Image (cartoon, rainbow, N blue to C red; front, side, top):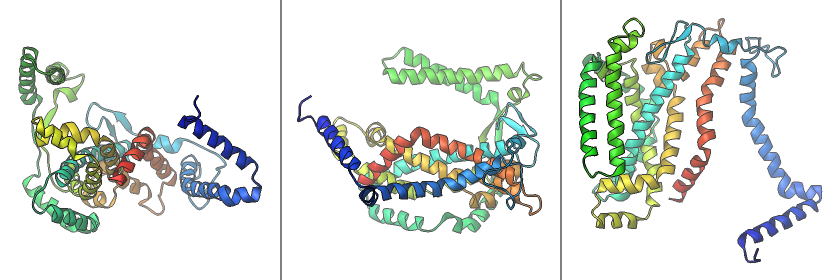
Length: 394
């Protein structure tokens, strides 16, 4: 390997640094390097101690906090088992039913569903808004950016009284959902997708467009098969036979649709600023070259900006999902039915009474509730760091 090789130079420098550290006196090592390790270990212990205590309480046989010990005398997993008592699998949405007063699986399902839908819509709206502010030039653009920033300075829960009255008023008009039989959707969907697939097979469409057409035809055929099977599964699987498609959902107090609509305006401003900072770092010469070749603004956004901004889009989605998953104040005000509770509001049911508090089950539910967030961070931590680094540079 040549001496001018950067990799060889780095290896030599690391070897020299290692030898220097080995020859340091303990006092010098602590003064220059060791104190940083000590601070890091203290900060890590400070962050992990509450988590360790919750895990210890979740497997402790003692169901109180006053006499609980960090290292319990005896352990049990009954606290986890009690969370699923009275719950059984069901072919519906959610895919299970619970008869107990604290249906933890339903709480988790509600939180994941609401956070996933709201985070996806927020990401789409924020990306469109960020592209408009970063790439387009129109009158009032700067004022709009400042207005978004000023509005985000006020917490969303300050408007919960107005939101409560707004959803109560909407419930008078949209208090019932519009549902139709599965046949009404299955037959037109299957016919349209089959026609599109037929046209794609006999045309010179691009391979990706043909693949999308075939996938859509497969989905349409699967829905039609679902409707056909439902005619013969009345006694075996009533859910399939009696399935109703919601054309327009119910919007009022106590509905997930109303809560999602409230969440949509919560973080769009912050996400727009974050995405705009990243999009500003993308060279505008790419846009100009694409427009010279005849690309429209939508083509530039969907085929150039979105692929290049994928790291920050993933970061924004994850941060929004986590924030909505843990939101408590608005959910506790707008949702009153226990079966509609989210994970954060459902935890309050375990300690709502001073003399009947279930601290062991509360700790077990808290541990289970953190699993989706931990899985997301463990699998996408590299993308989170890369996306935030790009946003800071922008």
